[in-house]
Length: 490
Ligand code: CA
Image (cartoon, rainbow, N blue to C red; front, side):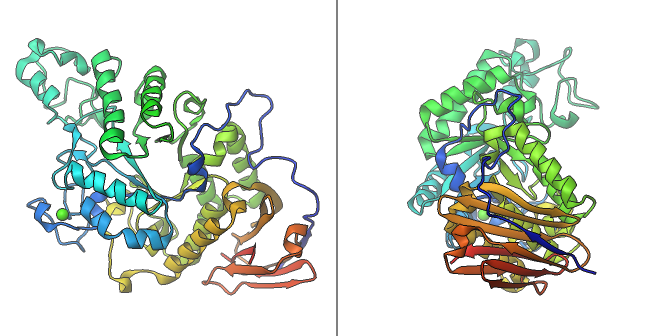
């Protein structure tokens, strides 16, 4: 059985891409303008590419080995420089690196020195070189600010362990009783209760000063373009206000976005972060496109509700389908490449800034940490080429069409499992149709005037045989399950 739907696109767009919530006083979008045109790519430097075998940790595993919580593969900053051609060809324009500062673990969220690049990743000079080379080809660099805790090897914490009450650093931490002990359970606040990651007392003025200096230091030393703020809910809003002031004073165009899994609105009032990782968007999208547990109408209701909550900031929310803290996209899709392509298509055509987790574009698989942190394979026979080529084509479409980056969002169809929407910006337009259901759908769409007067091109998912015929200003679409189709001015 198939549906035959017709919809009209003649009416002008009245609302902006985000549906404004007039019941609330929402701040304007405070993100730097460049962010709107960006495609972010998240990299775990330990796992992306090994460009310098001389700095490998002694116990480094074979590159093709399975990731565990403790093993190392030898990836480094030189490796990212070596693969800049790949990144440029893929079309990403901004790298977000998980922590790069001195730390004993493979993930480096247990910092021991905020002012030094970890020797297994390279040197401060290599980091500055990476930023310089990225800037030379129009790309940007964001680093991870891990401020809620440090590693137990941090000199301040080591001093507390050695000198107890006499340590001037004791007030940097939240310690209950004396002496300080790590076992059997730490008697200090620690990230996830792990003795190896003592929480910083971020209300202490000295600690706050240190963290602000970190924020400014790497802008001055390496000319980085912003920070992703780790676990920001652990730290006061007052601190984040002062951090924003310090960072924006050093570089007005710096981009600040937080790791936020729930409602990010309290940080998005214009005085703290520009944006946040949009994990709530991810949940809604996966429920509609991947687990298929909600229909299009529910999906749209939830998506609009999220946009209303974030207001103008929606335009630069960092949308993502996966990260170092989630299962891999293709694993969630249970290997169904068509689903993964469809999810990527929505990521790259929706309102917000897309972020791609390294390797998702070539079909890497893995459960949540540590499974999702495998080493990137560089021999193409290990890549899913349908996924990779689709991702690349969708990125190209986003770059070529301002409608996809900055346009309004107009819903045309939200029926059963079928979603069709139109994005428009000045003279540009893009029509996107997705069938997230279990059966083939047929529909007809009247194209808007801006599209009728131009020659058009279509892109559809290579997995399932979509058909698209354009005839006298109408598009006739046949979308099989997971079918995804874009109609764009040529
Ligand atoms: Ca290395």
